[in-house]
Amino acid sequence: MTELNPKSELNIDQLTSDFPLLQQLIALEEVSWFNPNITTLEQGLPYVGLGDKDIHDASLRLQRFAPYLAKAFPETQITNGIIESELIDIPVMKSGLEAHYHLPIKGRLMMKKDSHLPISGSIKARGGIYEVLTHAEKLAFEAGLLSESDDYSKLLESEFREFFQQYSIAVGSTGNLGMSIGIMSAKLGFTVSVHMSADARAWKKNKLREHGVNVVEYEQDYGVAVVQGRKEAEQDPRCFFIDDENSQTLFLGYSVAGERLKQQFEQQQIVVDKEHPLFVYLPCGVGGGPGGVAFGLKMAFGDDVHCIFAEPTHSPCMLLGVHTGLHDEIAVQDLGIDNLTAADGLAVGRASGFVGRAMERLLDGYYTLTDERMYQLLSELNQAEGIRLEPSALAGMPGAVHVEHNREYLERLGITESTLNNATHLVWATGGGMVPEQEMAAYLAKSSV
Ligand SMILES: *Cc1c(COP(=O)(O)O)cnc(C)c1O
Image (cartoon, rainbow, N blue to C red; front, side):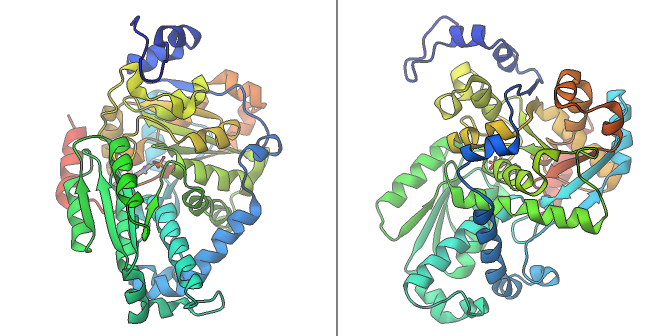
């Protein structure tokens, strides 16, 4: 390991000696890192460049579209066209984790079932759908076809479908973002191309084709699919490219989750304050989803919520970017890490520079886990709670164990044993609700070995 990386001019030897944790990343060990440089929300917020008003705008936009969504996607009728997931307790899984890790988990273990969000069965039903709606609204406003006070169910009329048909939307994806953007765009009438990386599942591609989406397949990873998608879009002025790596719109679509979760906590009479901290464990790919949700959570709960990101040992891009301060100037491949993982949505080698720079002060920590552990937890959750998720969605499950283990972190935050007894640990389950029976059987078979 003496070579200088010629492309990025990174001196890997120097880096690994400056940041010894990288040696463990390179060895594909499961690691955790609790960032000593975090700040309060007040100190960190200016670096985000977005605020309450932006989240509120996003929330209002989703409310305007709710009557349309309720009709276009009947499965959203019960929530009146609001795309939201359940918040549940998982007590049996908690006991299972305690036995497995030989460690008591103080407080309550809960799960946010974004895995079962309507329309696309993953967390991407927040950001992806929101960005398509934002774009559609803008076009319709500019054409004088729609105004804010209209009943948006008129978007179902053929006049609108014909209007949107003149425009196209493109996106690069490992699967779930493509599902959200593809299904939503096609429903409105857009011509839509999804550029899929090699790791994308066949059933996701098939489902998109059934919806009339143009699926373009690549033999390379997510980064390549994005570059190609962007290139194609640049040649067509009527084509809108959705940029998962840098989009503030996507980020804001995710952030609405904060106020929604706050309402759910109030309904279930769960207190979050200094004496009752909330720890949230979010699987991270490029960072937009977990970053946007974390931003919304910080704005809703302030310094009493603690967000921790989880990544596969083969794709620890956000941990790498934030830990070294290099953000999107370094990829896991620069360290010789292969970015191959069974965790859909998490196979990302280079993190979003926007999210890392905006959110690093407000994210308490990061950890990695192996694919084998995700499979094992997948099976355990199925047995314990009868809930079936895709592997990536299990990444948040061991988070509470890392927090319990990390005394330095807890002391630094002034969180005592007794405070920890009042804590809520929330595992953000990000996908799996639409996995076909046969695929799920294969996942379950993997974990029982
Ligand atoms: C996309 C995705 C994530 C992570 O979101 P990013 O915005 O890529 O960080 C996590 N879990 C699942 C299932 C996903 O599809």
